[in-house]
Image (cartoon, rainbow, N blue to C red):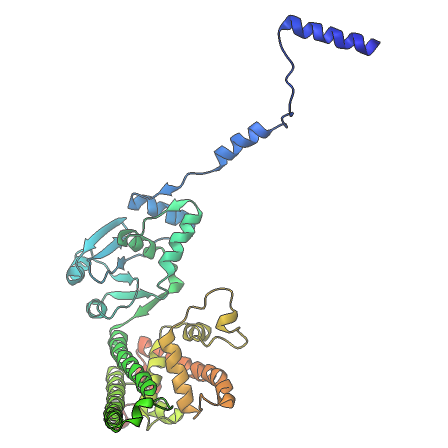
Length: 392
C-alpha cells in the first residue's frame, strides 16, 4: 500500500511541474567529453607553401643541420634547382651552374644521383676545385617525404622541395666523387650499354636457333632461305662477339689510363684473367663500384650477394634493393675466375659463396687504392717508379 501511495504522489508532482520523465536508454557518463577530446586530438594536415617552413620542419623532425653547401636537384629536360643554406632555392640552367656557384663562393655541392648526361657538368665542378658529393640511394628523398607525412606534414613533390630535402639527407648516405672516378664511371656506363646490347642479341640468336622440327623445312625453297638466315645470324653473332671484346678492351684501357699508378696487370694475373678481356672489364666494374662503399657489408648488400647467412631476396620482408649491373659483373667474373658452369647444379651452388669471397678481395683492393690516392701516396704504396729506382 505504501508503494502505491508513493507512486501516486510522484505522479501528481510531475503533473504540477509539467515535466515528463524521459523513457529510453541512459547515456553513459563521459561520452560527450570523449567526442570533444577526439575532435581536439585530430590534427589538420600541414601543407608546405614556403621553403623556410619546410626547413624548420626538417630541422625539427630530422634533428640535423642542412648540407653546408649547395644541394642540387637535376632534371633531364629542365633547369636544376639549387638550395643554399640561406634558405634560398634558385632555378639555374645546367650550363651556367659553375658561374652561379663561383659567384656565391660555394665550396661543395650535393647532387641527387649520377647521370650520364650530367656527368660532364660534375666533372667541370671537380676540375674547378669544388667538392662533389652524390646521394647513394635515389629513394632517400621519397622516404624523407613519407616520414614528414607521418607527422602530418605534406610536402609537394616538386624539384624545388626535393632540393631542400636533399640538403637534410643523412651524411652516411653521401659519397664523395672526384674527376678520375667520374671519367671512369662514364667509360663504365658506355661498356655496360654495349654489353647489354650484346646480351639482348645473344638471346634473340638463341631463340631463333632453338632446336625442334620445323614444318617449313619440308619445302626445298623454304629450307634454303632458312639456311641463309642462319648463316647470316651466325655472321652477325661473330661480329657482335668481336665488338663486345673491343668494347671491353676500350673500357679497361680507359681505366688504366685514368689510374696509371695502379698495376691492373698484376691484379689480372692474380685472378687468372690476364687473357680474358671480358673478365677484365667485369673486374674493373666491380673495383670502381667498390670505391664508393665504406664497408664490405655495404658492398655485399649493394651487389645483391649479401653477407654470410643473410636470407635470399625472395624470403626478405622488405624489398631487397641492389645494383643489378654490379651483381651481374660479380657473378660473371666469379664464373670466369673459378671456371664454373652455371648450368650444372654442383657449380651453381658454389657461385654465391665464391662471389662473396671474390667481392671481399675486390673491396679491400679498392679501399687501398682510394686511401693511397686521397693521401697522395699512390706511388709509395705501389712501389717506386722507374726513375726513382735509378736514384732520380
